[in-house]
Length: 278
Image (cartoon, rainbow, N blue to C red; front, side, top):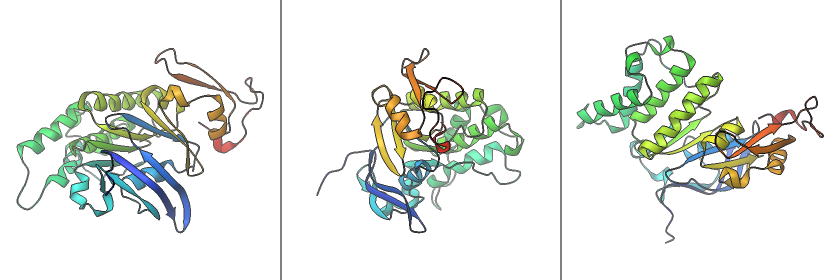
């Protein structure tokens, strides 16, 4: 039998909603212990890919493997101890405190013979500390700012204690300062705890600065993947986003930095498609 690599992989993965194919025959290997950003225009299949990798969506064709095992044959609690998924815009129950929300991350580790333990306590308060939420532990989640709420959800995912963490648009609806705060936290989780992180991002410059690996998608297929400095260039941006641009060296991170052209700001071809917004 063929031996598959450790970590999260997909082979010939096809995903569909009501018979409409959104992701088509993708082969994906997520680099272990790295931060991977999935980028592309709206409705290209980024979030659908994450749902497929996390078992929230059953493949129409192909398969997803975690550490060489087919994830659809794994027991739910076993998978939840190895892989965590934070979807877009999660909604907390009314009146729940930050502490109680984060405690929910430990549910995969509970059973009738194993109740709350010192390990659970350490995981929860460690997650609160990592996300800077210790002083807000007793506050209701709905009283927090947008950035604090997002950190609370990430803390819950951290408390789950999974080596692989999938985040679907974790910076969505946040102002620039809170976006950077969340992305800095993601890098801390990767570097300090060795977690494999996959996140969907709309801001391509953020992806180039914070990710070790990028996956660029268009129309349900992968156009390019690899180290940002090796795959992100003007031609790729035009193909994926339909956007004219120039690419320079990021003065802060040293990787690629995209400067888009519009009809009013120096672009020869301008914007080819409204769906190509970064």
